[in-house]
Length: 66
Image (cartoon, rainbow, N blue to C red; front, side, top):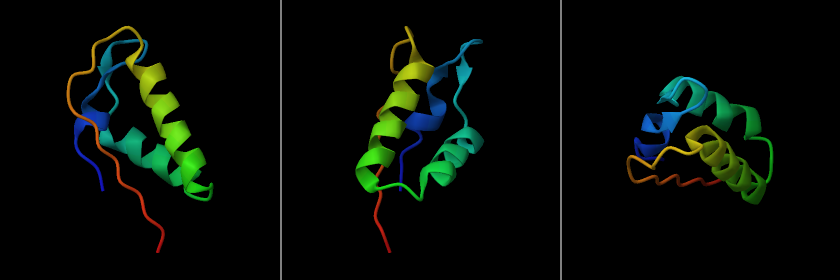
């Protein structure tokens, strides 16, 4: 579960939004990793994307194993 804040964040080389497709790809490509490692990757990816831009929205990502 997640809010729209992650996907709506502006950044990257062209200052564009991260977008849902890139967010889903990030989640899917790391889903095999332990939860703590997934969290660290999401944080690092978000911060790298955001760069010097201000955070534009709240960001909440909740993960759970089934």
